[in-house]
Amino acid sequence: MTDPHLPHHFVRTTPSGDTTERDVCDKCGYVHYRNPKVVAGSVVHHGGRILLCRRAINPRKGYWTLPAGYMELEETVAEAAIREAREEACTDIIIEHVLAVYSIPRLSQIQIMHIARLDKPEFAAGEESLEVELFAWDDIPWHDLAFPSVRWALNHYRQVAGEPVFTAFSNPPGEDGDMT
Amino acid sequence: MTDPHLPHHFVRTTPSGDTTERDVCDKCGYVHYRNPKVVAGSVVHHGGRILLCRRAINPRKGYWTLPAGYMELEETVAEAAIREAREEACTDIIIEHVLAVYSIPRLSQIQIMHIARLDKPEFAAGEESLEVELFAWDDIPWHDLAFPSVRWALNHYRQVAGEPVFTAFSNPPGEDGDMT
Image (cartoon, rainbow over all chains, first blue to last red):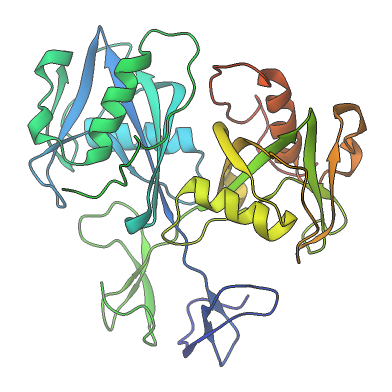
């Protein structure tokens, strides 16, 4: 593979040994593979309450979400989830388990959601958040959640909270993550 | 975001609202985000035996691996694992559970491994495999496995095989997936 930063002239063709058409530079042979993106995040609990962040940025500015975001290069999934909680909620979470692996095929997005805990209720709105709050289950703003997968993760967490062993979830049946 | 296929002139800079330096085209503003790649695969069982494929391609040509590979765009994780088993072992697997989420940070790779079953022992070597075989546990070629994560997944499968409920695994303690 040659330098991806040269000016390229891409044509659609199937690279040798591959089975799928890709964008291949017909000058230098560089193949522009396009891959799903990974979101890492967490349902963060403390004293029976759940941490949510109100989004300061689009998409879905003003709506509530879990601390989560795109993984960077050379991170583990857990490191990415911890970093996102630091960036969005200025807090240090302790990852406990993988809760779920969701697929949003229309967006070519994979979401890996954890259960994590806060040992101390110390947090604040990071640059991408308008506010950050711990919610009791009955106070969760269900009608103002940012994305379907936030609802999925909260409900999946609710099903297994406190269980020592549980099987990781995937999308609820029939749900593909599209907004309705 | 503008067309990623134009000739670009990239400079390292932090896009507005971002916290990390990226390659940004100073002619058209295109940001070349680079993200970890996702491998989807499976420990496939049938009658107490495990399906392995001997690699026909590099890296690790000639060594044994699980049916697994890079996800394509607009797939679910389960669809990708099923496609890889079809391509590498010419077989139709039934996904049962998420077994593990592994991180190989040096390669910026995430591996999502499932437990899957074969209802009929019908398989054959696909284009990327030299041979495909069902192995009893004691016959697994432990010294000729292609990657550390193949060993991890086999051992994790062994720990929970037959359990109705188990918690998804991540990397074994202290292991980062580098070959030793």
